[in-house]
Amino acid sequence: MNVLEFTAVVAIVSFVAGLLGSLTGLGGGVVLVPLLTIFFHVDIRYAIGASLVSVIATSSGAAAAYVKEGFSNIRIGMFLEIATTFGALMGAFLATRIPTSALAIIFGAVLLYSAYLARKPRPEAQRNLPPDPLATSLRLNGSFPDLEGQRRYNVQHVPTGFSLMFGAGALSGLLGIGSGAVKVLAMDQAMRIPFKVSTTTSNFMIGVTAAASAGVYLSRGYVDPGLAMPVMLGVLGGSLLGSRILVKAETKSLRLVFSVVILVLGLQMLYKGLWGRI
Amino acid sequence: MLAAPAPVRQPDPFRPQPWRDRRLEIILGNLLRTGVLISAAVVLSGACVYLFHHAHERADYSVFRGEPSEYRTIPGVIHSVGNEQGRGRGLIQLGLLLLIATPIARVVFSILGFAIERDRLYVIFTVIVLAVLLYSFLGTGIGV
Image (cartoon, rainbow over all chains, first blue to last red; front, side, top):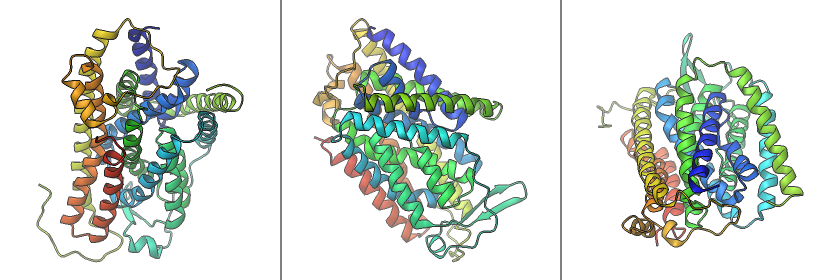
């Protein structure tokens, strides 16, 4: 393929990934690295560099739309960003040291977990949990607009959530993804933050987290302009379109299709990491 | 811009001044979107220059070589933008640097917002996050 064809095809694939990622809420970055490495034979390090950049673009691009809905909690976001940015920095340094086959195996495992999570019903909405002393003193508890007016929520298990977020940041820095799956584990399951609050808040955090590792990637020469350009523009375009049609689209079957794609890509990455050359 | 008449802060743990947080968030959200659109425009302009000169070369990313220094440091990128040879790729990298800078700008504005709210604890938290970001952005050799 010459540069023009390569740019065009990668831009289209990235656009579709960004669109599906935004429509299903599963994120586009998670499928990009496997697609680039498996079908375009891109070295996984270049793929991770390009994907990381696109993650910043989608997170920041969607932020304005999310904020207007009034669900995100800026204090939860900022507090947990301490954990994710330290984790991201550590992950980025680790990525430059561990072999690419190990990266592929970890990536495969994360994909399989994301596919599993996408099929699992959401945790029940919390109702009237008692306030946790630590969360209260950190002023993490908040409220969001509901059918019956403002609904308050009390954040739980702060230390567990904080440690899990460190892990989410490390995976983000290691694999160049937003690691939405681990964030769901930390914010929805452990901290019992209501679903809409945790999704919109984590979108805010993803950009800052990715920026913490992007500097390392760029300075180590992992971000190639010829590859990052179509990936970033494609994913950004796709996700912006996705956030506009989100309300009307039937997302249930889309989620099923997308989670099967993630599952297949995860198996491929595991296979490549264990037996193939990557 | 952010300043509203400051009422005495009530120590109600459940409602950390929601309307002020909302205003801050809306400003930050717009800041992020503007930053992304500017950086996407710069990347796109670089893409045109790059494709104009290199459209018919072979695209091969199967072997990792690492980028040369003109595409992985801030002075290198600025230099290549001013240089006919690598202008397209230089512009793309410049756009990506702006993109990375956008969430950093958001964190800086959050510090101001929390300072206006006189929330010392969250000013400290945000400064920690900013320090990590600045270390990554400037302390890893990207600035030289």
